[in-house]
Structures are given as structure tokens and as C-alpha cells.
Image 1 (spheres, one colour):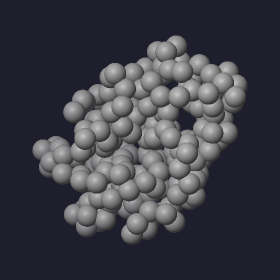
Image 2 (cartoon, rainbow, N blue to C red):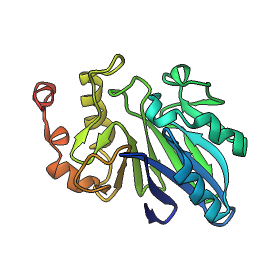
Image 3 (cartoon, rainbow, N blue to C red):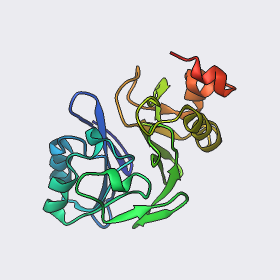
Image 4 (spheres, one colour):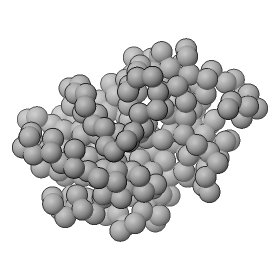
Length: 209
């Protein structure tokens, strides 16, 4: 587990990451991707004395969403996901998110960035213009799979180039899985070393193993 200001990265299961975004001043929190078992994140919420207001899913896959309902029952939290993925989340959601939407939690600001490619309704969360929670869109050293039923090489390439590579280099990237040689990295460094961000054409992108 790593803590940086208003964002905490918590290893859930073998390689999934759950995130807590919280305001220390009002003791309210958002959980991103509870995973299959939210026990580690719930333990941290208890330690900090937080009230969980929202649960946000970066996409609909069960390894990110299976614990949604069990966590909701504990706090009466609202479950949120992009409108394209929401119908595929077991148990449903309480409200949907759209590209460009801004959420506020006291002094914390979160911008929703729609990044299809792994799923049609995949999103990234830009937190306080400092942190980018990328779900299964961008990993450290790679990107999410595009060979699943609603995946798309074309959409992933566009998301990486038009939605992510255009963001500032000093953003800290927090991925949905611990697949890389480190749990997080700056976007600037990933632009230099990550093959999926170095690919200049769709054809080049599709040749990456």
C-alpha cells in the first residue's frame, strides 16, 4: 500500500489495485474498483475513520466490481460507472458518469475521462490535476487487453494518443493492476519507455506483443 496526499493505492488480491480518494478535512472518501474482495480497503477506511460516499468502477469487469454491493451495504454508498459499462455491472449502479464530468469531494476534484479500448465504457480519473487513475486502460509498461468482447485496438490506440498522451508529463499514473516493474510512475516516464505510448500508428500499435 502506498499513500500520496489524497490518494491511496491498495493491493487487492494477487495483482488488482483498489484506490481510496479522500478528504482529511471532512472524513469522506471514494473507493475506486473494490475488486473481488474489498477487505484491505475497508480496513484502511476503518483506520482513517472515513465515510465512504461513492464507489467508482473504471470499467465493468468482475475483478474490479465484484465487491460493489457488499461495500455499498456497509456505507449506503452510491455506485458510479460510465453509462456504456453501467448495464454490464452485476447489481447495477446508482448513477452514470460521462466524459468530462467533474466530481468534487470537499477540496478534492476528480475529472472523468472516457477511454474506451479495453471496454466501451472504460474511464480514467484525473484527481486534483496530479494523479491519473487509469484502470485497465494504461498499465506501467503496457495497456489493457483489447481482445475481449467489447475491446477495440482502434479505440485503445485513440484513447492512449488523444486522451492520455496529451496530458502533462508530471502526472502520476496509478494503474488498475500491478503488472509492471513498479506500482506507479510518472506519465512523462511512461511516454519514454512504454511501447504502447511510443507507437506512432495503429498498425505499429497492433504489432506490439
